[in-house]
Image (cartoon, rainbow, N blue to C red; front, side, top):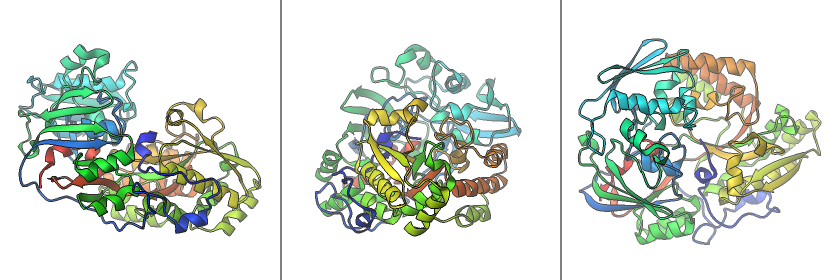
Length: 548
């Protein structure tokens, strides 16, 4: 998943082109409070204290306005943090990244290519109409409709048919055994909407005028473009354990990180996801709430988008990664929160796999320590010294400034000629969707998170010909491992194949992994009751918030 807004966690003064890697190891950038940020002491929090009571209203600061509340296009933080509280999926992705029944009370796999979902009885949409199997069929089939152009079509890429096979039963038939399909049903790809609402709203479904009509603990009230989205508690919600503890919940759009930090300090906003990490010290000093770090599934990467140039040689990719002082980059980007990584997944998505396979996937790999001299030798061996590489960036956040300057300094240090090309944020987004926009681009930055509890989601996008394989990297052995893993329904066996895929990707580096950073958020002094996990993208977290 991607977009510049998702990756924008910091705001501040950009580093100049003259800043070298050595400086990054010593000095953190100026934070929202204007002073140099000291290293942040951090630990993961699983869950905050239970609420003492209910609240009339909660105000939540969002770093951006959603693109849409249509689940077919909810592919980013701003959209999903709202949608998760209004709409529900067949399965529920929990804060610990386990999957449990959601709108489907159960599901089974009677044949290798058949998935049968049985819907709960007694569930109603916000307009009072009952949930039916016909609603599930209509909702799911939208992902197959080219006219819709669903962002989640990849979850359905192996689906042959979606049929109602009982009063509350839906059967999905796939062309091959597909282990990933049910895992996708815990996110936006598994959301169920009223078929009547979809038909009536048409192209306006999910926008600021039509809104949505789902089954979640909150219902959509209004969307004032450029300002806020307001939700209210749905008193007919089916799950008593997740009944909303506030009567109203307002998402206020605050794109400016300094303004958002000030709103949190003053209590104008009760909390915010995607906290700018350069604001941590400022917020902690204010003493008005808590900075929390939770489970994450994302890895910061430099995407190698041109394998025809110097970076087409794996030795050059390895050299560049070894020349980036990733510890120093973390100090500059996040005040030291997080850790460098040499792979593209986090351990949090390996929970259902074989522990021995996971151990191999993270330890029996190539490691890329900071070593300028060894990196220089690799570039010399590859015969590309003096060749130019283009690093594309955008004025989106401090994170982008740090990464682009650090990468340029590293490339220069090992004998390459780096060029930084700064484009608009809108043009940067196009890099992820339009191959023409990537022409002449060697590297660009992303923070790539996973939406299901399986590392195979990451490696599926790196197969030959996949849409998100932006550099067109191709390794037949890797492709076969991933394809075999997709068709393997046993989690332990699948994790062994995926571990081998991780080892291959780690050795060849189609992308350059930089670091994994915990999910950062702020919780004000009025509220408590949630988990700071990245599962907020799909779990009804706002319903759990109540009075301290």
